[in-house]
Image (cartoon, rainbow, N blue to C red; front, top):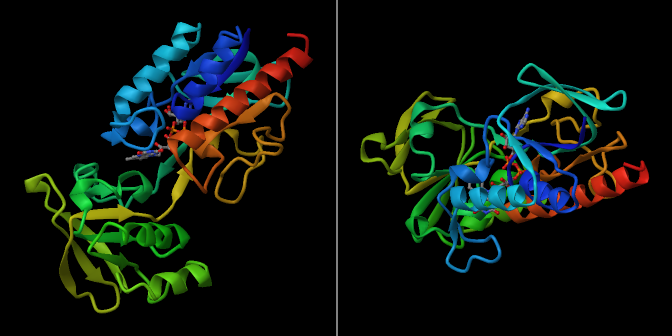
Length: 309
Ligand SMILES: Cc1cc2nc3c(=O)[nH]c(=O)nc-3n(C[C@H](O)[C@H](O)[C@H](O)COP(=O)(O)OP(=O)(O)OC[C@H]3O[C@@H](n4cnc5c(N)ncnc54)[C@H](O)[C@@H]3O)c2cc1C
């Protein structure tokens, strides 16, 4: 019987592990398919406090894991395939094995919705990004034309943010008007640096042979016409998919699948806490995920103390 199982080993999960381990709860951290979480897919993280020269995403997560292990956290490679949160102890199935636990911290993150292009996958981190706040300030994008794909609030925010660095931001949208809120759409359309590219989809990101982004190939969905738009970076903002499918119908979620929390990090099931990008569709940053992981750990500890565990 575990006291607390942490589902996910990204910033939220590993921070929760540091705190619960220091509290003597010997947490079991189930890593899922991506040990270290999303940050392991990026190069330099420049906005995590405490690293004035930046730190590699992989190294930062390796350090967080070591810090948690130092206090007694156990890391288990495996994926939670199903969960029964209807009775106590809670039961999780990890790669076919049943694990019982008094408390659960869900920190399973969210995946970016991708265009699904082969060139997109090959150029990820080589000019293709899913996070302007994270990558927009990198030297490779400075004073260069950039492309943002999408037409919702996120795409508009990304485009506006990128105007600080880019020479121009081309906002490629498959419709002839933005889906974003009125105020956001107005801001974007009145910004002289943002050039909307209507009725177009990206069919290829160039140039895989060079190993960096030099442009995008576009197809006009109305006329079928093809064109190439030169740019140094492509920011894809077509939404996120929270990794919460295994908790559907047990944890309260919004329509998009984000876990709804109350009083911070508590879910609708007492003893189950949620933290990081599986909850947060607004900030989606390493430091906010870590902060929520800390809060979830403190709440879990209080819950277990209250139960006399
Ligand atoms: C390319 C890129 C660059 C970024 N750069 C920055 C940056 O510079 N600064 C910044 O602050 N933020 C950055 N971010 C955002 C940051 O990575 C996320 O906000 C942060 O990782 C969220 O942490 P998390 O722990 O909530 O989720 P994640 O890091 O996504 O971790 C989720 C964890 O849950 C696990 N998991 C999923 N499903 C299951 C399951 N069924 N069972 C068990 N485990 C499961 C995964 O394997 C993973 O370990 C970047 C993101 C990307 C993609």
